[in-house]
Image 1 (cartoon, one colour):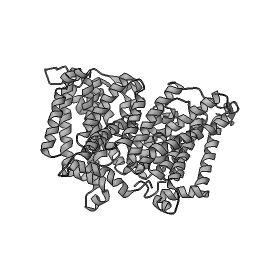
Image 2 (cartoon, chains in turn purple, blue):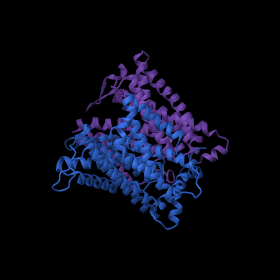
Image 3 (spheres, helix red, strand yellow):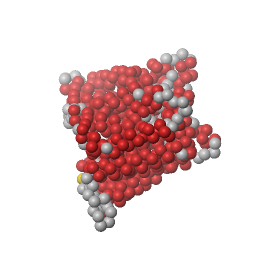
Image 4 (tube, chains in turn orange, blue):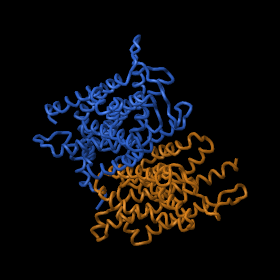
Length: 290
Length: 338
């Protein structure tokens, strides 16, 4: 029993960390500007493919892990400045529709550039082996993933609570007009915030490519669980996203073990249960998004 | 529109569609594509009622559409039902789907409503996708189109007769839609979009109105889905996917949110456009995506909405007023943006 269960629990943890980090990125963008970024998965895939191209051209994995997300961020900020910005003053569903269109285009472009089938992207040699934990052995790369994602979350939390810019960002979520009146360049906040979300997605994209594979639609496969993560955790709460991500990561990996056919449906059932008890999600804040 | 103007516009449109089987070959269109336009238009109307009129981002209507499709396909496949019964069963299934989801969706507004619609809609997608024994899973299920279902007279439905069936259903749906949005009930939905708090202060339970709107919307989407399954003799999981919901919303925006005829215009542009582009290039998805972007950034009021905005109007027509307020109320609340 423990030999089946323990690896699945750990897998659930890894999956949950992915969902949490993607959910946090979505949540950041959603909280500040009300934009539901349906192209979030596309940016993950972009970073994954860029890292794949870099590594296959001979650069090191470590360089690609940072450089690929940064390039995705540049693309993201250009998209935000040109295409998303005009929609900030309009109904939120317009930006949902627009980014949906972007994700359709991106998918086809990835197919053109990197081919319709998945490409192999393996973790660096140092992380390829498994580590024995006594009662089970577990791939080193997955442990590495969890460590990187946890570091990213801590760094983000410190950025938001300890730096001047992070404080302005959080203040802008509360009251954009007041922040603007106090002399903060809100457009800069929007751009940096969007880039931050994409950077988290990019890191997750590179790591996910090594674990879950890389294909034109691989990022979009993580998008829906990330939405559910945000809904379960409660909009506006980063901590909620972490809890939500871990919960559905566990739910998915445990149902995969016991009732494989229900593995995708399980997170929606969990979401329905949470919403029945707490309509705003577990840590949703009063007043944000009605 | 005034009654006379509306008749002046409506009569030629209906006449045009009645003659479509003779006109379509002239422009090398298959009549089944025109059927698809009409069937899709019903689904777009279902989105329009929620999003265009009530202001709820209905990004989950593909769930009801797909439930209608699977309801019809399953009842034909496993119970040998006839055409009309299959459509009724598909519609009923979609209605039940609406009944199940509405209590969850009701609780939230704005983008949260959109997110919940997307997420809950996916449940049905995964059920159809995973339950391979019953639904054929990813490959979908092929059916043979049933007889019309009048006892002792087995009428085979060819593409042409299907087209006229679709036209009749569409006209009935359009008339129903028109009377719904012009009724006090429909006006209340528009009022909810413009200022829900005020509606509540007037003593109206807005949740109850939205509940009914959701059920009507689910039923219309179900009719559309059931017809669609019988049109292509096929049901597949992607009909239930949120991408499909997105296409409906796009079509609605293309035609014009909050307009009665906009749904038909939008469905026409979307279905015919997709058909033409996909025969020209295999990269049609890029064009479709670009269409989303261009439509949202370029003409958010859609074809009819933009036309209506420049139309001289002595007495303010009701549905256009509703449309004008669609964008206008966003800056008033100014929750986001600088």
